[in-house]
Length: 539
Image (cartoon, rainbow, N blue to C red):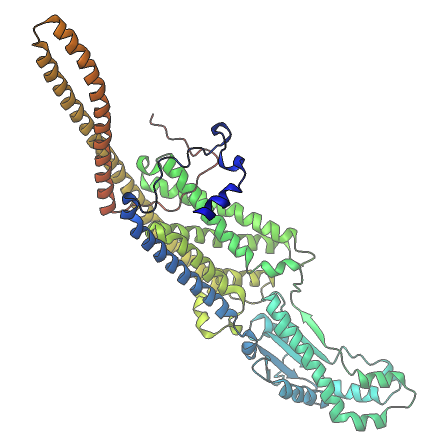
C-alpha cells in the first residue's frame, strides 16, 4: 500500500481530480463493483470461458488460413519442372546438340521441363505460337533452319561474318499475360539461362576446331564465335506494367470486400424501413437482384477503368475493355449472391469467419499457376476467382489461353446456385420478420398487461387504506391521519416505483430467456448507413 500511495502521489492532481464540467466521461466510475463482488462472481467464470473459447477458435482458424495460404506458395521452385516448354529443332546441327547438352546440365525439379518434338510440318512462327495460345505449353523454343551452317560460315570469316544475324538462331514464343510474374521467373529467365548455358556448351564442344578456322584479323568472325546467338522472343502479350502485380491479389480482394459492405448496407436499409414485413417476397427478390446487378455493373466498370487508367502502355483495346468489364461484373455479382447466401443461412457469429475463409480460398486459387502449387490445391478450379482470372487472361491475350469453355460454365453455375439460395433466403427473412414482429407485439402486450395489473393492485390497496382512515371520528385525528396519509403515499409511491421496475425487469428477463431458448433469426450482416437509415415510418 505504501508503494501504491507513493506512485499515485507522483501523478499530477489535474489527472486525478478533473472537474465534472471538463470531463466528458465523468460518470464512467458510477455504480461500479469489484471483481470479487457477488454480482460479478456469478458471471465471471462464464465470461472467461467464453473469452478463451473464442480465443482458441479464432487462433485455430487463422492458423489454418495462414497454413493454407503459405502452403500454396511453399517451395514453388521445386515444382518448376511442371512448367512444360516445347523445343523444336529445325536446324538439326550442332546448335541443337548444344541446347540438349545445356538442358541436361540444368535439368532438375527447379527447372522447366524441355520437351523436344520433331517439326512435323509446323510452320514458323504461326503453328508454334498456336501451341502457346492453346496452353499446350508455356513456351515454345526453336532453332532456326540452317542456323548451324550460317554460324560456321560466319566463323570462317568474310562477308558471311559481316552479314551474320545472331538473332535468327534461337527464338521462343510465350505469353507474358499468363501469370506474368511467374512467367517472367520460370519462362523468360530460365530460357535465357538455357541459351547462355548452350553457348558455353557450344564453345566447349567446338571451340578448338572453330578457333583454327577464324581468320586472324576478322573481328566479325571473332564476335560470331564469342557471341554466336542472341535469344529472341515473340511475346504474345507483353505485360510489364507495375500494376500487374495486384491483378490476381488486391483487385479480387477489394471486389469481395466491396460486395460484402454493400450487402451489409442493403441489410441495414431493409431493416430500417421494415421492407421484409411490408412487401411480397418476389418483389424483394426482384429488387435485390436488380439493385445488386446495377451496383456490380458500376463496380465492374470502375475497376476496369482503374486497370485501364494505369495500364502504362499495355496494348489492350476497347473490345478487351468491355469483355473485362463483363467478367468482373459477373464475378462481383456471383460473390454478392454467395456472401448473401452464407450470411443468411449461417449463424451470425460464424459470418466473419466464413467471409475471411472465402476471401483466402479465392485469392489463393490465383496467386500462382497450379503447376507451381502442390496437387492438393487443384481443387480450387471450382473457386470463382480462379475461373474469372482464367477468363481475364484469355481476354487480355487476345484469345490465347482459351479456358472459357471451363471458366464460364463454372461462373454461371455459381450465379445460378446463388440466385436460388438467395431467393429462399428472402423467403426465410420475410417469414421470420413476421414472426419477430408478432413476438415483439406479444411481448409489448405482456408488459402492458403486467403494468396494468400492477396499477390495479396499487389502486385497490390505496382505496382500502383511505376507507380505513375515513372512519376516524375526530377532525383533529382526521387531519393528523391526512398528514400521515400524504407522507405514507409519498413513501408508497416510491416503493411502487421500485416494485414496478422490479416487475418489468422480471418480465424482461423472462422474455429474454424465451428468446434465447427459441429460434434465433438473423438477416445477415448489417452496417450503419450514413444516409437514409432512419426512415421507419408507421404511416
